Image (cartoon, rainbow, N blue to C red; front, side, top):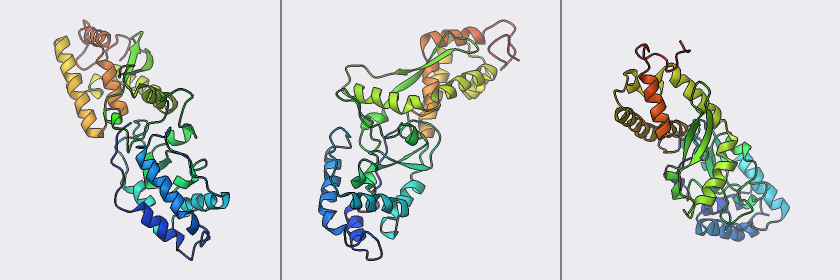
Length: 293
């Protein structure tokens, strides 16, 4: 998850005008009379700051909706920017879920239900396969429950989740912990986004594998752990430094590796790790469990 700057190297309204006047397209001239209402839809999308709960569907005849959805699929020269968004906005991590995959565009408001935004740049977000896993879900039944928008929701730039490791050992119990307070005005949206997008990915499998790799080779979690930390404070400092490095490297505080390191910084995990580092007979940079080689 991450906050992104929206693409600004083209004009959506001008692109829509050009499409409506393009005599080579099947949508000509039928699209022309609907351009004002589609532009009004773009304007209210921006006025709502991408809050999907506050964005109204633009009523259009089905043939016009089909034209817009087909234009997204064919992408004539007038909207070549769609391909550029996909190619140039290859994120360091997926802004929707925090994984290290990308290569597709997510219609934040699904084009099947909101065809008026099918080619609207502010509705096209670089993403990974979490795009398909959330399907068409954008809001919940309760107040404030909605997906977060990488182009508009500044809270995506804050640290929102950490791994929680419990029953520590070779195979700990792994869950996700939301870091913002329940009184935060964005809490309902953050929780909804995590439940309906992040948790549907392979994030927990990633955290379990990362834990297992760290037990075998501690330096894979942080290079400085190739040397045994002499104290709890030293271990915490190493992991805090690594957390900052991962944030900067991936341009996000909610990339999966930062989420993993954040979980290691919980007090009970730090205590367990230090005891494992200080286990009598453990070889230099060796495994953190006696049973591992």
